[in-house]
Length: 105
Image 1 (cartoon, helix red, strand yellow):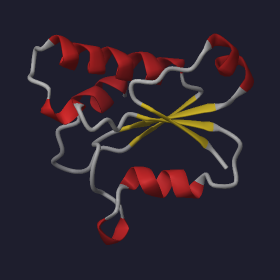
Image 2 (tube, helix red, strand yellow):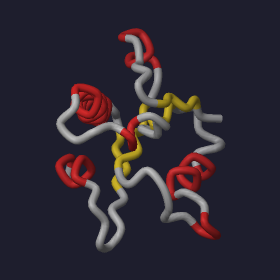
Image 3 (cartoon, rainbow, N blue to C red):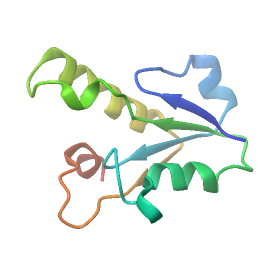
Image 4 (cartoon, rainbow, N blue to C red):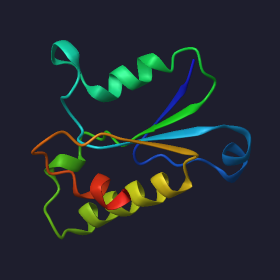
């Protein structure tokens, strides 16, 4: 069963050496079957793996003003977490605005 790391938590240096990490990049909500989240589908598909999944969902982030220090901190966390991950899964639906996910590509 995977360990789920939610924003803004970070892996320690020791954890980075001992676990395989998968970062989920893309829109926070939607995209899953039957109204679920694409992120939950990926997490469920990894149920038999001993990995750490880094999930950027954070209830406070959508309400942050563009250009605010909090928004910048969220962006910095997303980029650092993605670059540190062993595997990055990117999902960008047609017509979506997912600037951080697109930048990671």
